[in-house]
Image (cartoon, rainbow, N blue to C red; front, side, top):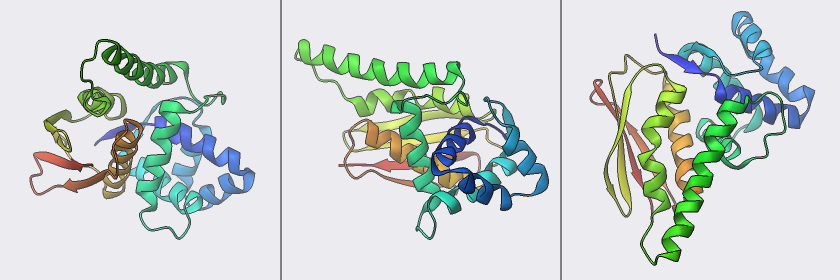
Length: 208
C-alpha cells in the first residue's frame, strides 16, 4: 500500500491554526476516529497510508475551501506556495523539509540571476520540472517519477511502478503541480491527470 509523507498535513494544520481552533475542530469532526487520532498527533513529518492522507485532504479542503469547485486542487496549490515561499514560523514544520523547499526556490532564483548576468537563457519552469522526480521521492514511498517532453509550453510527468493512488491524492497532486508551475512563472497552467495505463500514470502540463 502506498505510504505518503505528512509534509502536506503539517502545512495544512498550520493553515487551520491561522483560521482558529474552530477550523481544526471542523476537520476533526469529518474524520474517522483512527484518522482523527493520527491528525491530532501529527507535529512532524512521518508516514501515513494513502487512504488516511486522502481522508484528511478531503476534510481540510471542505473546511478551507467550502463549496468551491476543485477544492482539492486549490488545497494543493495553497500548500505548495506555503512550503516553497511561506515564512515557516510554526514549530509544526520540521527543519529538514523547510530546508529542502527553501533551498530549491533559492537555487532557482540564483540560477535565474546568473543567466541574466551572462546574457544566457534560463527557464525557471524547466529548472523546477527537472526536480519534480526528487520531490516525488520526498512525498511518496512508491513510484519512479520522470518528466518528459519539456518544451516552452508543455511537459509530461510520468510515474511508473506505482501500485495505486487514491483519486483524492491524484487531484491534490494535480493542484500541487499547478502551484509549482505558477511559482516558476508559468501563465495559466493547466494540468490533466491520465491513468489509462496503470503501469505509467501521466500528468500532462500546459502553460502559456
